[in-house]
Image 1 (cartoon, rainbow over the protein chains, first blue to last red):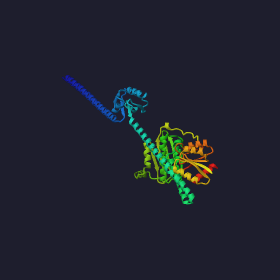
Image 2: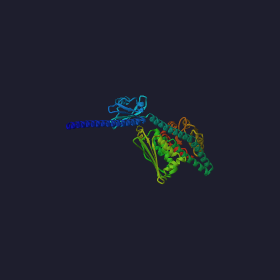
Image 3: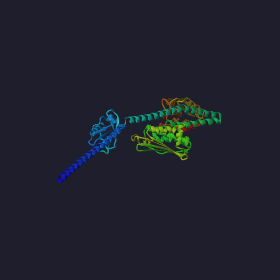
Image 4: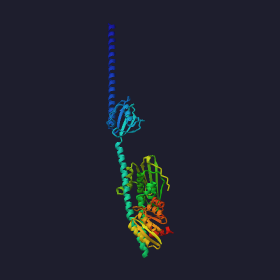
Length: 366
Length: 120
């Protein structure tokens, strides 16, 4: 009996152990499965968030898996480049559009799509081992840039036409009438011996001299023949005639007719501001180029002002510098005014240039 | 007497040049024209000592007229008068053979002195 009882007890214990082990194993598997399900759910949510973010992006994007398969493409990508299939298909498309391979990661490649849109394509590896290809549509941006360029060109051309028209009116009418009047007064003074008439004749001469300077500023032929520094040097004569020392630093490069006209008008406005507001004794104009930018700085030793008052002045209707800023920014450049009361003013601007339009000045053979 | 031809397309200027120079001792205005072509024709017919003319004129401008006068009547002196100060115009005038380039606004006395100086 004792032996049988011990055997039964042992068997029961063994059975209990087997059941407990089986139950623990099943429970562990269940937990693993639950954990795996949670991870999968988390990953699905993460991918959904990523894909949602990529879908909302204005940039077309496509994620290629480690095997090169297209895993996700947002609608912008599909709209611009068609349905995404694989990395190899993407490379082949680039080859067809641009005759080029994708290049280095992060390097943008500009191509024309089949429907004529200007696209910027690039790619970058993701930490997951996937590849992210991107495409930006630059067509509207380029149109806007072209439109802005045309607008500036037309604005400058209209200003030049108006300046020429006013110049012709001054030349054909005011200068001629004053010349005739001066000579008649001088002749009358000679005949009658009245000194007052001589003074009036001399006054006519002074007015004609001023008008001649104005004519030269309105349509500086020297701008076309000798470039912007020479034209600015001519425009500085008005300041010099008031006793201001003006130094225009040499600048031998030619910038192209449109840009030179724009730069000349901007500096002319700056010099006009110096004349009207600065009470300066010395002005310096420096023109330089650096890479793809043209820089100009007009500095004076005048009374200066609080830069904040510039906005007040604009609000009060003083638009000179405001218009200069608008024109610089329209041309894609930057404009800066540095000033402090009693410490002079430096007016500077930077304009983008195409290096191709830069040419060395012609040798003066005259 | 210094014989002078005047050419300017602006009537008031032309008449005042005529009146002033014509009233000066030793100067006689022998003809006046409206443009460069008339200045050349007057220079050929009158062979004046001096032609005083504007630079910018219709038909033939003062620069071209100077060139023609200097070729046809080499002894005639030419004084160009202009409202434009551009160096290029002045250089063109000198290259064409002008003896003087003066600006509008010059006094009548200054112009008369100039006429005497180029013939002295």
